[in-house]
Each structure stands twice: as structure tokens, then as C-alpha cells.
Image 1 (tube, one colour):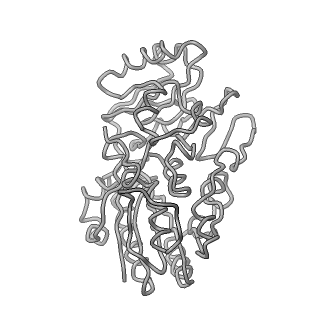
Image 2 (image 1 turned 135 degrees about the horizontal axis):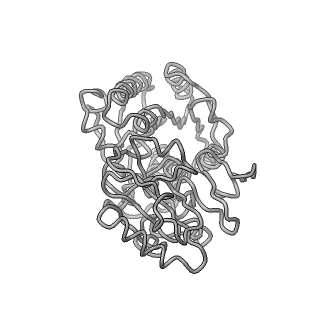
Image 3 (image 1 turned 90 degrees about the vertical axis):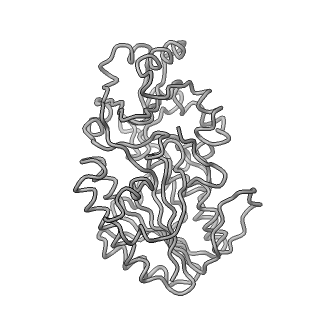
Length: 373
């Protein structure tokens, strides 16, 4: 198990370090806080699924990225896109911002909420500011005179997730690589610019065909070239950082939790995702569910109670009381090649080859690489 390095070595620590590098006053920073050199402008290239261990395994496919200085951060738990984007968007740990997994129970409703697709059953809706009420780093940056911009595909503009984690940013829609590079360079010409560029196709290739495969390696080469092009357009005094939201593992075993009687008895809702399951028990059944899940997955997953996950610091040093019931009564986290699927709620996910979410180094470790002109 690799516990996230909250307090200096996690994605939640990066936003404050970037603002400090830009000269934005921040509250007193704790000892051991992540520190970056000052810069007039910053560009953050966020590559979905670019785990540090994965990149180190294929330096030949990414010669530019592999040549850059940097360090390794941890994603946070769970190591998944919605959680990491919110950590990057707020500078808070998962336990503080409340985006604690891909699909979470909405307390008191009996419904699962998909935080990525921003969907509830029956056509119900969720207010992004209600689900994630914290101010974002972009709102704080704008008040300090920094111009935050986010360059990403047009389809994500105005979505619930974008509204929850990127409030206060100027959204610059750009679908192709050429468009994203051009829009980033344009935004970086402005003084005190803070530009985030998102690329998601590497993650998609890993899910569909597995990380390290031919499709994934082609995407890694595209990412490497995109990083090089972004770096070539940096103005004097700027800095670019390359990071990711999580890594990935390829599944060697799948268990359909909906087809194993021991895994369904006493279970009201099955949330999370295949590598980080939130198991919500029926009233009075939490103990029995914990025992059953721990027995079925003995030696293949860490299976703990909500209380143990919180006390062990998986979600950070503190979990706000308001968010506790979003966490499963039981949390099941595979530590080998196991994927715990639930096809009735995640039909496509059950077909994946690559997965993420757990506390293994391959999923937790993400790069923080630096480029300066």
C-alpha cells in the first residue's frame, strides 16, 4: 500500500505551490510544503492517466518527457479523475473537498451519483456548488490578479464536473492537439497567466486496450510531442509543469460483484469503481458485509470499514463530517490485478482492460516534470 503523501507530496499540494510561484499570497504554508521556483506565468499540462511508473517503463516512446527534471507526487485516494481534478481545482485533500470517488451515494436518497458524468437516476439533477461548495484555486487566483485559463475539449465546457472543480476559470475550448497548443500559447502571452491544458486520450487508450499496448504507446508519443510543442512556445520567465491525475494497472482478474451471493447480501448500493469500491450496507448489515467482502477478497484487496479508511488517512488527515456518509460502509481496494466490476451500473467499465483507483504505486504515482525556457 502506498498512502498518499498529503501535506507536501500529493496533487492537493500542487495548486498552492503554483499560486505561490506566481506570487499569490497564500495562508501560512506548513513545514514540508511543496515549493516551486517563482515564475511570471505558469502552464500546467495535465495528462489523464500518465502515471509516473508507466512513463518510466517506456522512456523510448516519450524521449522529451523522459529527459525532463522533476519529482513524483501521489494522486490521492481514490486515484481517479474526479477526485484528482477536484484536488487540483481546490488545493484540498479528498476528505476536505468531498469528491470521494467516481460514483457515490447521495446520503438519505438511496441513489448513486456519478461524479464524472454528473448524472443521477430518474432525471434528477445535482447542483455543482451544493455537491462541491469550496472556492476553487482559480477563483482565488483571479482575485489576486492572475488570469486562469483552462484549455480542453469543447464537450466538457459547462458540464457539472467542470462547474464543480473549475469555477472561476476562463474556459478555452480546443478539440485537436494543434488547437490546444495554439490556445495555450495565446493565453500564455498574457501577464500573470495560469494556463491548464488537459489531454485525456492516453487514459482512454489505457482503459480500452491496456497501458503499455500499441494504442497506448501511440498516445504516449502524441503526449510527448504535445509537451515538446507547448514547451517551445513558453515566453521568457514562464514555467511549464507536466503532471497527471492517476496511473493505471491492467486487470488480470475480474470479479462481477453482482453475481457472487456473498457480495450482494446486505448490500444496498455498490458505488466507487472497479479498483476502489464504496459498498453501502443496508441498515444494521455493515458488520456482516465487511466480514463477507473481507473473506471473499482475502489476499487480493484491502477491505476495511469506513471508520478504518478515514482513521488511516486514506482520504487525507481529516474528512469533513458532512462527507462521511458519501463513503461506503465498507471500502474494498484491490492490490493486485483484480477488478471488482458491477455491470448493471457500469456496463462499459466491466469491459475495460486498464483500471485505476487503488493505493498501489502504479496507480498513485504521478509525475511532476518541469520546463523553463
